Image (tube, rainbow, N blue to C red; front, top):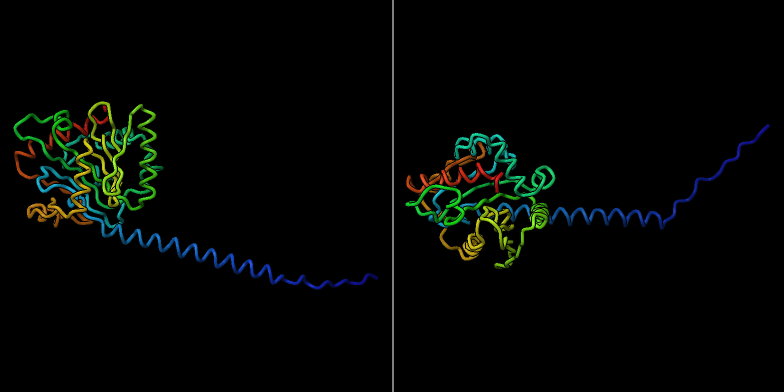
Length: 272
């Protein structure tokens, strides 16, 4: 006949409980700090200026998408802007060509941060000349403003884009303006993405660095901007999460030159 042997359960170490408690407190503290950092960033993002506040009051053409209800860009709305407002027959081809030009993967390097307002604007183009993409890049100013809902991921996108440009043989310099870094392609053909930066929760591309520098200085000094122009303010009031797309021009003459020039530029992105 066998007898059962009973063993006492092992005693819990008070040290183990202490370490577990400290570990739990540490995780909680990290979560609070990360949550506070995100909240700080989120609140600052909500105070970011509108794209129009970055642009000069004499902007000739502005096409924009206001934030949607989800604060995420809707492909259908972007395609509608490209097709119905700009007049491009194949929006998908334009989007694919843009991603190829940037040298990134959309879902890996763009979808992680893109959100909020988006705009493309044309300035400084003499209405007396021809309408062409080449003239727009040579004589005018073209700027793309893309809202960021996650600046660290937007910065990671810029680093990936810089690596892609270096792999293509582009020579990229940098310029500091009021604490913001502007990246500049020093040589090569005319390009709508010759200069670029991350500023005020926007990724910005332009055909010349002075355009971006003026935008930074405009925000920092409170100089006059497009958002203050009465006709633009009326246009902007009609944009909403329900009807986010819109097209503003400073007049018929400006639109007749700027819009076809922009259309030709976007239609030929694949050739750049």
